[in-house]
Image (tube, rainbow, N blue to C red):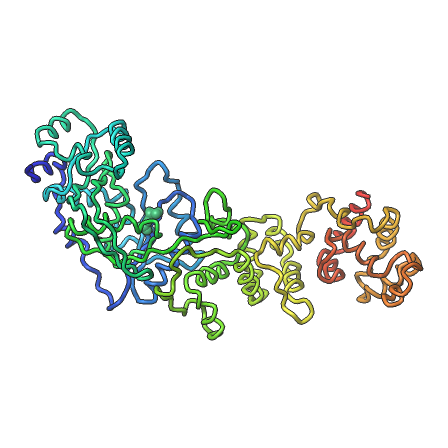
Length: 550
Ligand code: GLU
């Protein structure tokens, strides 16, 4: 069939040529060895931690070679698209230090755009028209029903499933047959006319896994859907070629598609990029490894780490250790350097599923938080609380001095920096008594005390303490001893341990009762300091409330 004639029938209004596209998107002038990489998400509003991992790897490889890293929005599936999805992607990645040189955002629209696939329709059509001219593409009018029939037949015959060879019934339609259907308004997709290469193989060279031999593609895959929008496969070929990507970093679920992608690059006359197929992030489920799943694992979503208040640096650092297991060693050997100075090595990346170990991330994060100054903690807690913990945010804004003191109180226990917090929501669970409004202050305080003390005893202790809180004297503990002794609380621990039966309890018991009444926790940093932070009025309210719950 005359390919030119068919191409004119199908694309009468497409005048551009591949040669013009070559001129419009010239090869990038970059230093030798520079990588042009990209992050190519679909704007579904959900960012998987694996997406962040891939974006981080791509951006680092471009940065460390003085290359280019760009964002391309793969919005060819309009049904799944979410309003504001692009902004969200850009913002959440920026929080982790992943920034784009080019992309569909103010200041990012450079020479290789548009960067949204939905704005590139004509570019795809120009390329398909040329493929059609050369006899490598054709319209297919098969309905969902007829495709289903083909599939059933293949299943019965235990043949490969797909549209190919003798099963591809639209492959050999005559020009007249096609013209008739087009004129009758029958919808069609455009398919690749795959060269029939039974028995041939392609060799894919993977930088991590070495050479892999795969059968050549024989499927007449869809290039353009009936609405003229390309499939992922075809858009990948056209976009990565004309955006001049030279290293495609993507999940290894795409590795099996290499033969069809390579075939399309060749048929279009485009040079194919190099690929780095990265292994997915896995988790241990019992004794088996499985992929982190959007449905089953909350920690699969990047938003989880934001909500929980993991500092971005902890997640970044942890993902680096997943990508290159020697990162930690490097960090210890170069304590003065920042993670940004680390050179990511492609050959050291994990070959099969990279295991995501939450316990390890928590450890990394504890160390990270311990290394932050008080003012860094304050800044980060505020940024987190502003979105996820409004009560705390309000407290911090209206009591900034107390808020700072509190952080200091937690950070240092004696001379040692504490390492008990891995994410800000943990810190805030420990400090809820500082900022929870009175009405939200839970009755849990009474549960904390178990049955160790009788109600009468609690009432007696709190009522006695309420008379004078001793907050102004500077000798709080001494005063507590004096207060406790007549009630039967031994002021001397050694003495108490020798003869516990002679006492109602020890000074430590008395302080415990007051601590739980005021904070709701059995453990807290120095109670006197906390009460000073809370202020007399709040302490009194808490004591009264405690009495009312008894
Ligand atoms: N939009 C594709 C995806 O979400 C991108 C794959 C690629 O990076 O080429 O899986």
